[in-house]
Image (cartoon, rainbow over all chains, first blue to last red; front, side):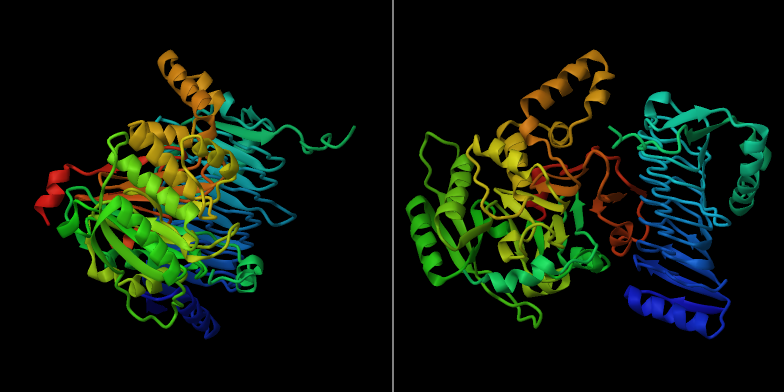
Length: 245
Length: 371
């Protein structure tokens, strides 16, 4: 285990130090006083654990392939940008474009998240990205989503009592969004419909709910006692006819 | 002009995916604090700019001369300065005339004469004093070759140029001023050239705007403003926002909240589902002021002597975070930019798209008392 004090550090200095420690075989890195440093954990390929105290900068864990990052604080925009595998756990809230173009691994957020959660997320063969948000999310959830799983638990509602914002799943053409609590039909993008999840569907999300509860100390039965809805596109090729005259 | 096309080519072809950064700090009881704080706030968002523009707006910095309009000027030449001074002398009593104090900074290349005047208008009875000052600014920017007004309000000023915020702050000796509102900008020009006058904040009277994003409706907004006598001359889209807030908040006396709903109007589909009274109001605003609707991605911080407002575009294409601690309101592009100067705010939140965050000065007297 190695400890780093990032106070006053530029992101390059911090990330070089982390890479060096990982290169020297460290398996656990704790960083104190993180404040806005970008690209932490970006491109790392080893299964190391990185603990961050503070608010990391944009693109946390971008292109990451294996590590586990735990944040004790809020996160900014672009967490898990194009992440390939690994895990990011946020004991706070997340900003916009959480899991942008994510293609594998898991992101768990205890609190709420911003706009465009899971934008351009995709799955391929054994790669299956998962985002779990404990609170609410803002507009454009799952925008242009192509694959993977998004789970919004609604344990904290927004100022109007909603779990999601407007324009849910706009441009979505693959993957699934599960929302615990109601979603109004008028808030859906035109490519998406509301489905009642089957037992098989729920079996697919249960392990991630369990993991969320274990990570942040929630009661699993209580969380599962509320009704979930499943949102998914009803056509695989929403724009298939766009250029067909 | 001190700019040749070839010197602007790096700006034209050098692109890295990034965005501008903004930060605003206000003490709502009017207590003044050093500009060093806002420079520190900007320092963690260095990557949001590329060194082609930075600037600061400061309120409460000239308490001894607070009754006079302070013009911060950019001149290309001594000739432009002479012409401007002749014009000013005809219409104003020039109470003070001095260079804006600067400090040598190895990374700032000075290309302009930077000057400030404290002015008392000799205005005709047919117009208000403020309209008279606005017309002066429009005249100088449009008609006097090589002269540009950075700011023209009372007890406030804009300091801007080409460089990173820490360097521009150091160059203008921002740490030596004390204000109760500070806004700042780190520029990453994408559509227009990186020149001193094109750096943010943009200002008219004591209105200032810092902006991250781009105003795709610039042409429409410019024509809308022209019909009210505003001339857009500074080659940057943000200029229209400064004039729009002057028009709506000063001339039309609309509240910040209503102004926000003109600039970032609700969608028609949302207006249609509003209760009758609101539906009529928002329909009327959209129909009358369609030319003032700002299209495109933006996060802005607007300020004047009484308030500071943060606002996003309607679909949140640029980030904005706000926080409160005691009498302080913080608004910035990134949470880290707030935490670096206020590690433990009482509340931190990301304002919803199109929903303004407004900090209002408790009373104007509280400012002058603390001078």
